[in-house]
Amino acid sequence: MKASLTLVAAAAGLLVAAGAARAEDLTFTLINGTNSTLTEFYTSPTDVENWEQDVFGKGVLPPGHEVEITIADGRSVCDYDMRFVFDPDSDLDVTEDTQNLCEMGSYTIHE
Image 1 (tube, rainbow, N blue to C red):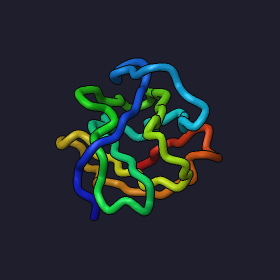
Image 2 (cartoon, helix red, strand yellow):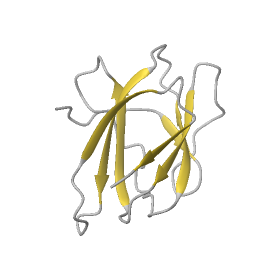
Image 3 (cartoon, rainbow, N blue to C red):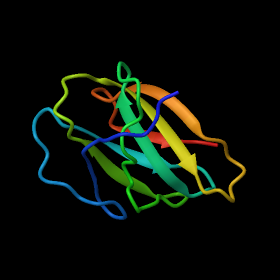
Image 4 (tube, rainbow, N blue to C red):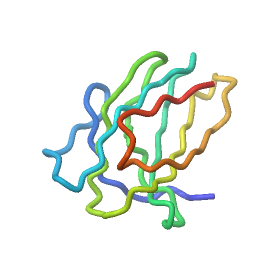
């Protein structure tokens, strides 16, 4: 299991925005297709042992909403692990998945 560390990420709307995307940045739309608020979102390359910083920071992603995520970590990898944490009042468990972010235009988290 990965622990929490650091990632430079930018997202529009409820999240903190970072600078302009560079050619090697990975960008995708994260869609909350659940009935619960997504309170934390972590991502890191599959070969990294620790979870990097919560991409949302102090933000959240309410049910039915979407946000553009940019991973601007300067790495030239595509396969990333993702970890989704929901509101403590939710009956949903923490969810993890692995995706090729270079090929993904959007990702919907479902119950």
